[in-house]
Amino acid sequence: MGKIEGTMPTLLILSKEASTYRALIESANLPDLTILEQASETCEIILGEPSHIGEIFGQFPALKWVQSTWAGVEPLLNPSLRRDYILTNARGVFGGLMSEFVFGYLLAHERKIFQRAEAQKNREWDKALTGTLHGKTIGLLGVGSIGAEVARAAKFFGMTVRGFTLASRASEYVDKYYHTDKLMEFAQGLDYLVSILPNTKETQKVVNADLLKQLPSHAIFINAGRGSAVDESALIEALENDKLAGAVLDVFEQEPLPKEHPFWVTKNLTMTFHTSAPSFPKDIARVFIENYQMYVERKPLKYVVDFEKGY
Image 1: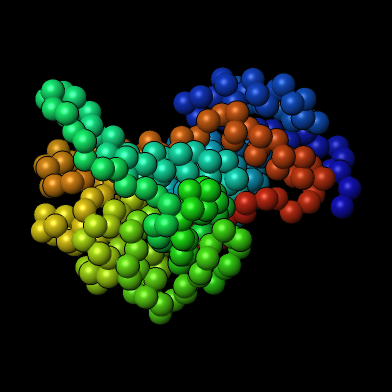
Image 2: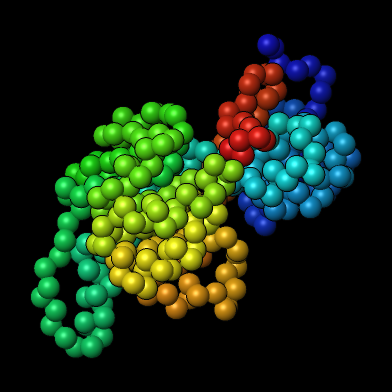
């Protein structure tokens, strides 16, 4: 289809970094776009954090498209909220960041980085041998665009990569895929289990006692997807009883985590407070700009979210 004639799409930016986004978008000289200074009933497009957008949905009767600055869009998926618009999320920008996060902690574990720092603090000459990622097996729960990047990094380090997905086999860096009823087989013997799952009905408490039992006691679990994927009690039990060597959690069922939550004092548990893959405006603006060009040309947008699936 050709370009929309006689229309001037209006954009409202709802973000803590609105001024940065505005500057980036204005520098792209997008055709016909008017950026609003404040909320208006004429608003046709919104760019911003889902948590901000969901609070004031009712103010925008002309809304046609929402571009999320996050990969996850849970605040906009509540069945009580409107769904008469196109929702797109941020994809293709978090894979590298997530890989850095995951392999930062994998390397810290194998190369005993925290242990060496503790030894230095205590003035102890620690000559314990280090491990290596080469030859180890990593299992990825979820192999979308982010998981594919983690898989690519894993192959660089000479690891064997397993991927668990509902159906897709999109990454050439995954050595073997597992689906649906093969979850327990997928987890058996893994050295590292990494969850990058979205929050959907199918992913609730996937990492439970049964799954954790399949892991050897030297295994490390990393959750950089969503806290809802983890049975917290089962993970605590595994860590406290040395059935698991350690866990790194970036996401939680409740955020911020309550001060009385047992995770704060759970043995061999590291928390990183939902910081693994921040939304940098320069990356998200690029996604918006590309999608806007397709929007005015009446072409299908990229990264459209299925409200029922949740991603």
